[in-house]
Image (tube, rainbow, N blue to C red):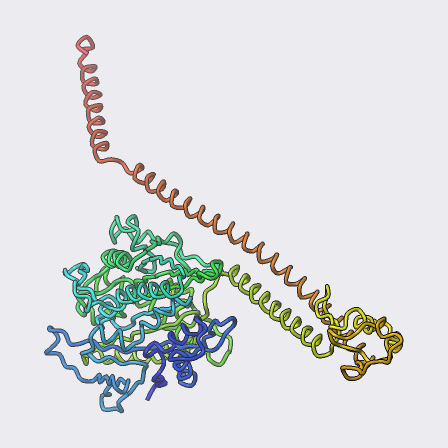
Length: 625
């Protein structure tokens, strides 16, 4: 048996996300807390108590789900049976040719009869989508050979045509794949969050494809108006910065307020991607497609506290063998590019899987545009779900074995997802927590002073607060802390405490009344108490000054944050205007067909006039001219 068996509770029934939501809401009991307790020893994604009620997630691995597609109508006569999936045992076995069978265990195994609804419910994809609303990155991608059902798993759309098939969106939503379901579930989760917490969310959608190692924007019409033949010389640049990591420069991003609006952008991108046909697959994806949904969350109780998370849905092109596909020309060149990027992706997975010992290793993310864009998804700051798609036919046994071995390596990769917070927002949150700690220390010190003033019967307040009922004489009985000798001379008699105690003048010439309390406080105790009081006052003074400094720093950060937001909005507005001007300039620079025709006619007429003048000059008929 190859590969670790997954835990029963990991990702199932949304236990980890439910516990995370309870921790965010400050819950300490109930079903969510019980789910977190169950996950703590299960090896899955567990939730611990974090700072200021925020959950702290333990390391999470890549969750792998195997899906075996059904036999197609034109494959009924082909032999099948070497691949034996077992959904109940979560194992997948490949029969060997005269050798020992090989069995693999994964988090989830789907048999050919599994529907799209059952796949969505059993794999825990909904839990990953919900984690995005909490500020965590999440990635879902499908891997496998060509014709193994990756596009059907991620999209669920139909394709018609032979040479270059086009996508047709099924009206029956039960046939939809993971990507459309994730879009609708994301907006449903956002609506529930907003009703429960009044937090505001902004969702932006981007869609790109990696075709022949070049990045193209599937939502930018100018990238697609020249067709695939001209795309070989175009493409977006891949950039990197410390905050965003790798990203495609000038990639279009559309803000969406509803799931239907986001789905329309997804449909547009799917219809624009490159699709081909060969012997093994009549509707083969010729590019890696990456759909990104950016979710920005602003908390109602703390507007300056913002998180930006990304949901990435990836439909990888399938690996191909030229002998099997019999591809030629452009299709063969596309296959070479696809296999090269998948080979680099496999190198990254192997390096991550073998690097658990903590030794320094090289991760070749930069060797391919695909691996650079998926850097956070594989071994980075993201929860990841991988679909390993298999073909049930015996002719694909070698490819199925390679896919299962690759999936086993991927399942051993560990990541450490964290909430994505802007550095300035994180500093503001840190200052707030520090101010709260100082306020708690100040309150505790005041409580201690109040307690000492009550138990010791000594005036420790200001402005008469805490003054014993004995009046001015009680205050005179307290010796200064700096003069221990004066303490000995102060009031050798008993200290009278009580609102009805007579003054000294009224007691002259009369026998002393019996004391109403015990012997006075010892002088040494008074000195120690006064020293402690002085130390406490010094601590309070320092804490108050530090609190004021932090408050001033917080106000300055708020002001700077407001200025940064204004600058960002202005830059975005300016960027939109520049894009519109650029498109208008490009449209104006393209020559009009009618103008070209008129220019050609004018040139022809001028040529005829020149020839006629030359002919008349030769014949000596200048008078006629």
